[in-house]
Image (cartoon, rainbow, N blue to C red; front, side):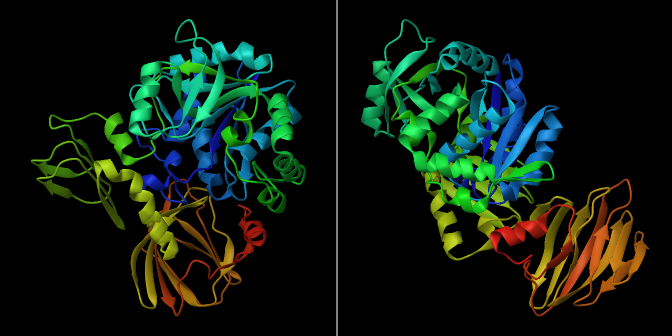
Length: 480
């Protein structure tokens, strides 16, 4: 049986400002109307002998991941939560340990959640070609048949095969080359782009990891052994997993093993590593532009322009990337988009919220969006899903006024429970226990006006929460 393992731990900093730490690119619908995570799951449909999907993700993304997976799959083998990022090798080790605890002799098909594959049938054929080798103990990787001398990918050098679709022993993994070297690789016909997709037996991967990095395996085994069930999730032990070395599958295992083989894959693959990739992937107009949202252009060519919240008008530009969000605008030359991550580093260094969150913030109960913010007051639009509820909480530094604009609210204020309908309001004094719940069948929408000396999101003390966020705060040593 093949257990698909979706690796969804990345942050996608080069696709800022759409992709941010708490809402990264794999959770966004960047190419189709489905998110990249959902597209990754849907392309599994043609693969035979497939078991339930297992997803490994950052614990902060867990409710978004769960909701998106439930929309597209009826067979979910579990969502494993990483308390900290440790790259792909520890994630693969935990997935292997988990699969061996559930199934007999499982093979793992590891797929990053942020790739585009146009020809899903070609992926299914490649998995079928690699299956016998993987079942026999080989560590199979899928090498992308290069369409040109790309300098942004690592390469795999393989033994020459009789055709472009044979399973071949790997001779070496090579780092991202310069242009001249990349041209030589492509002309030779013996090199493939390193896709980061793998197929192998769970026990074989763990055996190889024990030889190459026993400390990593020990940490992963301990993190899994001490893991705790949390709602629909399996939460790895923070201390044990944090002790693991951080490394990729390539560095930790594939470059050291003698069992590596590559299956060539020609399937319209793209890892969507920068805005230029989205310019390449989407449909172009007569001037070779990709225009998304409310965009007007005059004398603009070879550009990608994406508007999310307002009209964007562009005149007389060429080879540009322009991305507008409610709180940030990116303008970059199309040949410099790899440097967007430098902007994110500046935001991180300045502790600016734009690196992590959007103005609209997603929570397991719904969303909130900042409408206005000034000294001593803040206005938010809050949407609560039917049947959902915020935690029982209080604040030390702010009071809140709630005005219902749609739906029905069941509100706890101190010892009282009150029901509010549209155009009704209530006041939550500073330091008072309160909870907001939507008992209805349509989304509840309200306007919240906060007033006080401090309006930060960490001014919250939770006393009861159906989503387990009290435990989150204690685990991370953060305010609850």
